[in-house]
Length: 90
Image 1 (cartoon, rainbow, N blue to C red):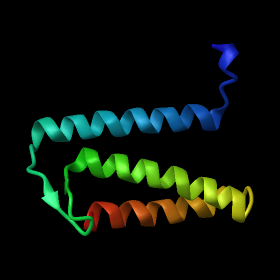
Image 2: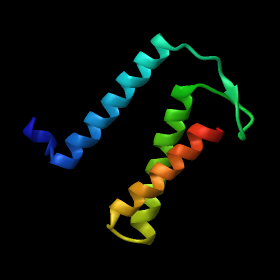
Image 3: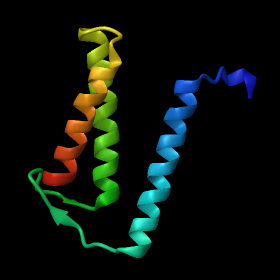
């Protein structure tokens, strides 16, 4: 797949997303859950919260690139804190 210009960070990104999807699928099968209502006042499941986390993390990284620059490891820390907050309170 040379036409896609795969780099190590790109491959790691897609592997992590695939592992998350597999993990959440296994969790949904093994431990079914009922939707819960958080601070957004909408019913969400684990999958919904994962989607909200991934979408928010994309915006955090874009904002970080625009405002701070290319020092992305610190943006990862912000994204992890955001993910913990989403899974706890949303």
